[in-house]
Image (cartoon, rainbow, N blue to C red; front, side, top):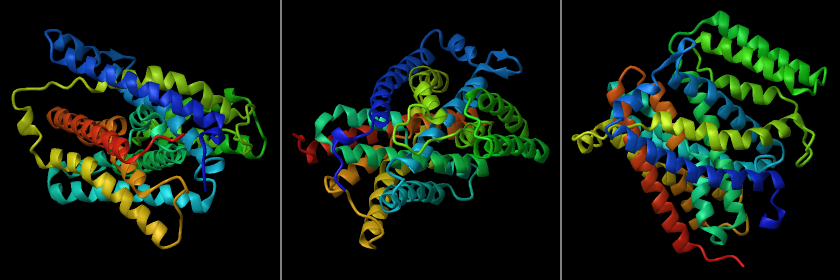
Length: 388
């Protein structure tokens, strides 16, 4: 399979362009948040996110409501990949799927090995995810040094990583479960699917209204409310025609790209990276939890991704695109170690009642993501030649 930039779909090109810009903005917001959290306005800045509005703190509104919109976009992107993208052809899909399994499994095993039997064992999900915006942002810096198929592979890999993270959140980070509210949420989802599949309701209004109701019920059920965003994505009508501009799913995905990239994710970064770097910050990085996060992202991700990719190709289950080399796959694995958004999100859930561990976890995530990004960039720059 030979993929050329000229043949990339308009949807994917728009997606890639918005994600690379979003990555730059995320870096600026993260730096700003870190500076404010460690300045003379630290107390005021951090207290803003704890202000109560409508029964929830601003931080909770961001992490539960705005991030549900982020997960809705992830779900729409995953649906597109399954129908029209890299995951639509089963043999092509197996490469990023196997890679994602390796990129999820090995980091989790490393964290579990270091934290088994300890309270920090619940942080096992933190090093599993890949931040699409930052990873594609680094690829964008490399320009024509990376083949188009690497962009598609990394995107599919990151989307599968996010799907794994979503499942982990739903299964392992649900504390008190209310069956009644959960069944109510599932009933709303079933109704929306019926509207789509049986009655072919094409207006977005009833789906958005149903999605809001599903979010409220999911919030009250104890399952993290962001899962409602993913379910809603698969209830909205989708056209299998490449880049169908009239498909409700396609229209909503296009509409959400910029708000998510330039409002929701930057606001999430501001609210969640206000990390106080105390005098004992270095000591915090030597805990088993921090070591599990750092080694999982920096070492586990690339090793897991390339090992499972090699297994898929060696067994004849999949194949490398003609313009993709193993050094490219390893480079993608290194960039897969940029956890950031999803890793921070899971850290908040895992250590909900322990601000100190959350703080050191976030610092570890930032350090690991920065390290993975720099090494990945240098690796691909060194082993990739400019494409004419």
